[in-house]
Image 1 (cartoon, one colour):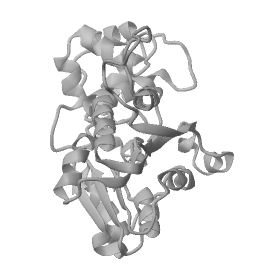
Image 2 (tube, one colour):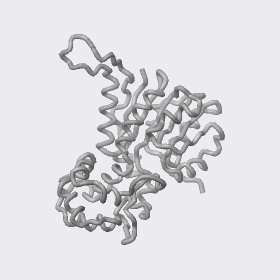
Image 3 (cartoon, helix red, strand yellow):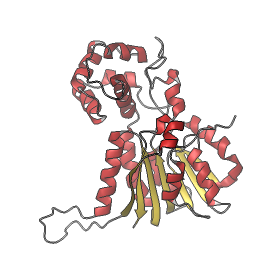
Image 4 (cartoon, rainbow, N blue to C red):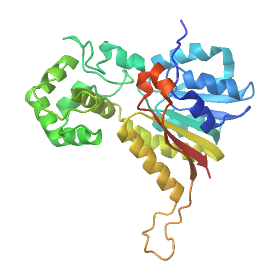
Length: 306
């Protein structure tokens, strides 16, 4: 059955990307292919969409959804950080647009067997959290292999409150093998109550670390500007403050260009602006939030390549 997954902020994304007939667009995080489908409808028979995803299972679902577009949709099993290599491998030096939807697929969150969440976590659910289950360390292995300070750093980077208390509880209750083991360890920690259950933030921090999501994002942003043609558009949807902060800082830096100290009379770095910011953290409308509460945290940023 073809997925009916609904993409987040689709009209806002299309307005920012401005895909024209015959253009070449990269969807660097294809997922179920929701955004890709809407983009391909704008590109017409002479356009091309290059879709990447690190989860081969997601690409299989996207392929079914996009099969009516034929060869205009080229799907590649690859991580965001390899965006530039994938584009060059398709015979293109530049593209007209790049989309990054950084959200975790609802299918991953709703599948307790992947260990992404503590909801419905059974005693035997392994703490995996890998997007690509064919490679890399699981969350359980990461907890076992990292020392306390490194675990504190990754918790802090993902905005987990009281990271030292969290790590102390995890280590005291080691070995952590399952999602339920982690949840049991966190029950002993008194954390400030926020909008999210504190355990949600800890699970999220481990998922980010296991999949190197911040590193992938930073590499992907740099690669996107390298392959975008002048006038090409970049659109990034983020859902976590750590992601959004990194995207915001990157865009501001690339719009400024020069990184010399402000008291230097003449530019010595030689850097010039590479992007003109067009979207500064736009969120979804109330109607979309009512229809899809998970879209509430989405923020859209991006701009035009100079």
